[in-house]
Length: 600
Image 1: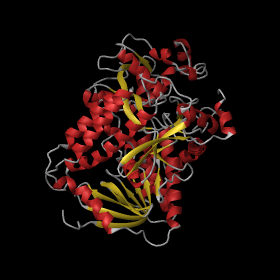
Image 2: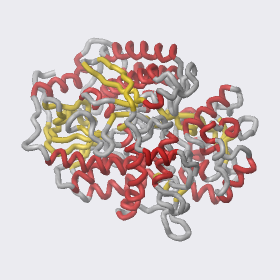
Image 3: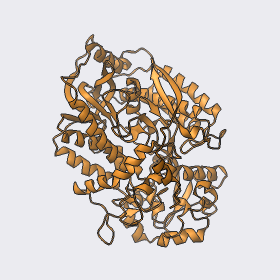
Image 4: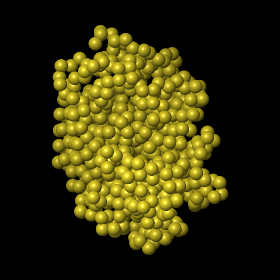
């Protein structure tokens, strides 16, 4: 590499890294506040993983059930998260979601309608009432389409296929970022007064995941290296229903809307097994026999079906059935909607699911059940932020969406992800713009720091080692799937930590051949740095939380611990070393505590 590698430079008030729902909403808000804003996306604009969200946007609008309100939504979110949530984030989310959905409608989103012409809302796991505003089973796609069109007419600068790999700092505060353009390998430096991380998830560190190739934990690592704190990284959500056959599509999501619209889970014996897995927490509110569950599907006035328990409960139940030898031929269970619903109903309500199974698995879900099983789906934890402003502990750095922790606690309810994006994406854009306006002059970017970051990015080309990044990635995915998966033990977690340490050594010996023009091996080598950071953080958090709670299940500590239910596992990285500390969750106000005692 040349002593001072050339690069292009851009200067903005606010840069938003990530162009999914949170990033787009943040960029729209920052631009509307009058600051010069740029949107940076790893892939093409419109390709964000948000488009894969199918079921709907959770918001207590009361269009189907007038009894629904933000207080019930808050209660459901806190209970679903096993009380590990940041209560203030859960409160703001529940209160503001309806306005954000109506805003999308004003901007052109075409929601399905009730017979009275209101935005339709469907049932989803863990929600007391039908609450998810939806567009068939393609809601995420409609959300991105709407936000993207609104953002483009704002005149935002968009840098597509740009992979940001390092943040730059001026003293304690963030002042920019360094990355490269994937097609050409050209190096790019962004100078900025404020940076918003909206980079999404971490699922590509696991073998079976619903996440797309972009989900390598970039934002988590960017924040961690800049001095931000992580919380609840051990709480990984395994969505209970991903495709399990054929293997080429294993992990692709099967929306919870299938169960919300009448689908039931069955084992190889044809039994609806979820009645055997109702936790004490939900007894009395959930149907405990088929007759009552069937009645709920018809008029929704009875206790709801256990097929719609929160995702962590359903995923563990499926896992238990498979381990007991009652699984489907390809290692999952059966999801049957054709027994209850007509072919026309299924094709109308679940068009994507119908085509997905027909085209990818040659299964007609109007005539036969689907084979489904748990798949790594969502990061419940993430970067610790201030609830009201989304600010991290690093001045000038904000985070929103899946990359930010706190809202979902130990387990996310379906549909809360899309409302999370628009509620906290808006707040991130607003407060990042306010922060940028408060600074005088341009951001000071140190040339030496910039060149050091560039040298790190290009180092795989200069090495003499022979490690293959694809082999490391494959080994990492096997490690995380088998040792840090849905069920964990101390011994397996310690083994995973040792393996991750070896992977880090191997990564330092990766040699990449060829030039910078679209070089997938180089891209993966850089992404592996993030995936290994994420994997280490998740494993350390899982070792420290010696209990089972939400998306974190310890076979050697199968019960929840009341003391640990009051603390976050906070992870920091200083001088290249990770540390984990227990820190108390802020006390909830009495009026919100009272809401959690209500049954309905």
